[in-house]
Image 1 (tube, rainbow, N blue to C red):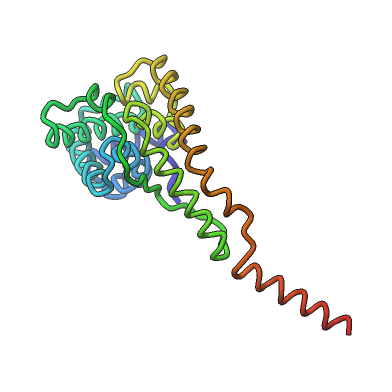
Image 2 (image 1 turned 135 degrees about the vertical axis):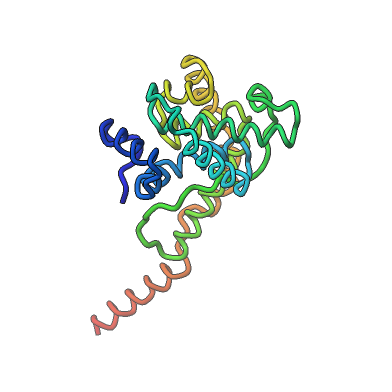
Length: 228
């Protein structure tokens, strides 16, 4: 497993960059693996489309590696790449809406979609619990996508990708105070949205059917047989 971009020592990052400038495939692959999840999520938070986001990340990588000599190291490589992805995503928005810029993104109305997280390792769940977890995940994704653009992009950067206030501000061209204010508002809106959506699911809370129900019956019968 590769080291995440956030924890890569400075000297190691500098070495990676130097190798990538020489078109070293190993270094390029490492940089891509370290930044894929963040860049996809940031692009997806702006574009609200999985395929557009993936294409945007690819284009951003091509642009970044073609201009890597221009990277001066004033910020972390991940921050520089994030800014490129933001610009690429906004460029795609302008093709949809010729006057779109980041201010337009911020004023954008909410839309329904699906924020697809990269898969992560998880313990095996029985089918019933897996379904419940999937349903809850879908509710959360829809609630995030329902946020106005101005709040959604900050929430994804700060909470989901755990970017610092300063890094988020630099990536989106905002003041740190603005990032803090929008994150607070995003959390409040998300909480409200979840309360509205989760309420209808409460009737299905603490289910005990399917495999779990049969397993209980098997155990009871087995114990009764032991008592004979």
